[in-house]
Length: 225
Image (cartoon, rainbow, N blue to C red; front, top):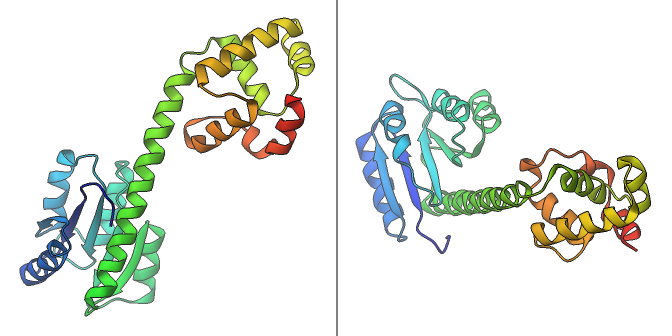
């Protein structure tokens, strides 16, 4: 289980199932919140914290069903690792759930070990997602400190281009490129272009740069020499 506080959200219209799953999860030391419907869960969404979390979601419920809830959450940008459960599942339903982002589809009745294992997997996935998001936010903040010219130099550095190429493309001298390069390294808090590439690759979903596909690190290493 994640070392930080984590919460498991259980959505099922059967109060007995909610109670039994809640007790099972609490025995592992995790916090649990239960909801009698998808609508009740949606009403609580604004209260979600930044702690790792996952969703144990029944597919068939009166009113809004589990698959519809998944679609709404996705549309709202709420990416919660989801474990879908159902007492009467079919292949098509399972496929739809997985396409919508479910970690796994469990058919009732399922074993305690199977569910807890999937919960651990879901929470670990959410922990990684939050760490990546935090890292991307940090890198985006560093990028905002760059001037337009420094950003132009950065883009070309991570594309594997050397100082002469950058100078020619930007219409500036190589010494000027070197000065901008030094400022880029300082502001991005890296020691080399290779480190810069790794930093940007680690936050790639927050960076609009095609160099990720075009510039392997080996090319950058050559350009650095």
